[in-house]
Structures are given as structure tokens and as C-alpha cells.
Amino acid sequence: MSAALPPGAWAPAHAVARRLLSPIQRFLQVEAASGLVLIAATVIALVWANSPWSSSYHHLWHTELSVSLDSWSFARPLHFWVNDGLMTIFFFVVGLEIRREMHEGELSDLRRAALPLVAAVGGMLAPAAIYAAFNVGRAGSAGWGVPMATDIAFAVGVLTLLGRRVAPALRVLLLALAVIDDIGAILVIAVFYSAGIDADGLLVVAAGLTGIALLKAIGVRIPTVYVLPGLVLWAGMYQTGIHPTLAGVVLGLMTPVRAWSRAVDDFEPESPAAHLQHVLHRWVAFVIMPLFALANAGVQFGGASLAGDGWLVFVGIVLGLGAGKPIGIFLACRASIFARVAVRPRDVSVAGLGVVGLVAGIGFTMSLFIAQLAFPPGPLLETAKLAILIGSFLAALVGLTVGAVVLRPTTTKPASEHEAERSTEL
Image (tube, rainbow, N blue to C red; front, side, top):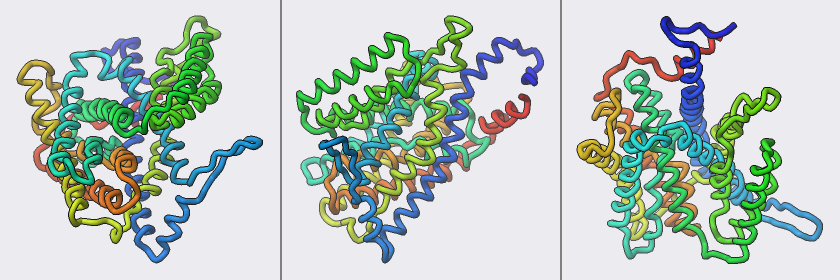
């Protein structure tokens, strides 16, 4: 049975609106639920790493796994396969989301993208500046990129707990901000946290990109065919010194965002980018990200140091996430609106901008990832992890508390309720 139309609605326009909004609503729903799984994985990692069985925790992630072909062998610890292997799929989905937003989302129109763009830039520069103020010239100076990131799963989860106090436009603003934030984090990793460039690896990167481009030019639409040139691209980036997970971003950005409907027999119900994002998003949200949290959030409290440089790293990250993020986002938004560079959506209040800034201080996944690149194994890394957990927890707690006080309940139903209603209409 076809879905019932609202009174006065025009069927074609209603169908287009549902097609555009459904991916956003599915994305937000998955991210909100993923936050709960991430919390569980983090708690397990913390308890395990500080229990009498802590040695088994570290032994597990140092277990070597190898890929062999005849006399060739590539052996790395399990921790590597999670951080550099599985997280490539995470970055691939990030690339798909960025591509979709550029094609038909908040980043497709400069006027709509202006507010989340300036918010994201302010939310990256302020935390980095606060961290640098405490650590410039010190042993922890390389960690300035750690408090710049926003974890969209936890941030959306906090907004979901606020229910109808959060207008749909506020959720979309947070999503667009987080996507641009991811772009910034990707650029920071590529430029500042990759090893020196190996020229020989660039040839392998070129081979992978050429293979992908040729398959696209031929018109190949089967995703699995792109796995081989994708692996070549990953291997080339690893050899070059660029962090190999960025191969996922490149592949995601190169994925077609238009469905093939040239002829009836060749019709695709959705584009390859939309299909892959729909298929992989739940695997990333409920398997890959929790595994990453399990492998990286196991801070041994005895291994962290809150003395000397360790204390400066700790304060820089906690203040960067808890204060730098909201201050940078709020001031950038207010300045851009005042200067008429950006326009505040009708359903987004000034208080709502402040709440978005607060929950954007939840760094977690990307912050932990950058910390692994910024610090060698040892006390500073353990201290940085502890600071990320505490800073993110404080940002979530303050964001939830302030949101419950300053945001008024709206009459607009949350995306989850709209989605449920549509499913019953079908």
C-alpha cells in the first residue's frame, strides 16, 4: 500500500522531500543508538585495562595477524588492523557522507553551508589555540590537534536525550558542523600527522587512483570491483607515509552520487554512494567504532601522569574540548550572523547555538585517533586518553544540563517519530 499523503500535499514534491530527508534521519537515528554502544565499549575497556586481567587486554591488541601470499608476508598487531585497517572503512563512510552533503545536503549551497562552516572553523581553531597556549615548546606540543574533533555519535546521542527541546534544524546544523569538522580533522591528519613522503609510494597511490578512475569511466557500478584498486590506494598511502585510513576518504569522495536511470533496464533505485552508506553505516556504528573504542579507550590510570608536561597535556585537552569548542563555535556563529555572512535558521535559537557548541566538545573517536598519531606509547598518550574521556564526559554532562534548562520543548516531532509514522503509512 502506498503511503498516505498529508492533506494538500503534491505527490511528486512529497516524494522528493522524503528522498532527501530519509538519509539524514536514518543517519541521525543510527548515530544516536551507536553512542550507547560506544559508551558500553569504553566502560568495558576501562574496567578491563584496570582489572587484575589487564595483561590480557594488552596482550590481545599486541597479537600479530599476518597476510601472506607465497613468500610475501605483511604482519602487524591487532591494534594496527583496527586503527589502520577497519578505521579505513569508517573514513570511507565519512567520505561518502561528505560527498552526499556536497551533492544535495547542507554543503551543496554556499548560503546554507556558511553557518556550519564558520561554526566548524571556530570550533577547531579555539581548542587548538587553548591547547597550544599550555603546551607550546613543551613535550606535548604535538597534541594540539587532539581537542579539535567532534564525535557525531555521542553528540547526536546527547541531543536525542533532550527530545523535543531540540528542533530538527538544530540536529541538521550539528550534523553539517560535524561533517565539516571531519574534513578539517582529515586535513590535519594528512598534513601534520603523517610521516615524511616516500616518493616511491606516490606511484602506487597514482596506480590506485588511475584504476578507480578507469573503472568509473568504463561505467562499472558494482562496488566490490573497486576493492582491489582501493587496496592498492591504501597500500600506496601506507608506503608513502600518509596515514592509510585517508584512502577511505578519497574512495568515498570518488563514489558516484547519482543513480543510473538512463534506461529502464539500467535503473538503480539509489546511487552507489547512498547504497554503500546505507549498507556500511550500521557496521561502522555498531561494530567498527565500538572495536576502536575497545582497543583505544583502555586507559591504565596508573600509566597516566598528571605532573609536569602530563598535567599541561591534560588541562589543554580538557579545556580545549570543554571550553574551546563551545566558545569557538558560539562566537563564530554570532560574528558571522552579525556580519550577515551567515543566516541563523528560523528554528534555531541563540540558546540552541550554545547547546550545539557544548555537545560538539565531545571529541572521543576522532580525538583518540589523533592522540594515537600525536603521541608515542607512554605516559603522555595515556594522559591524553584520560583527558579525552573526562573532557568528553564533561561536555556531554554540561550540554545535557544546559540544554534541559535553556531549550523549550517544540511542537515539532523528533526525526525518529516522523520515521516511525512513515513506516506505518507504507
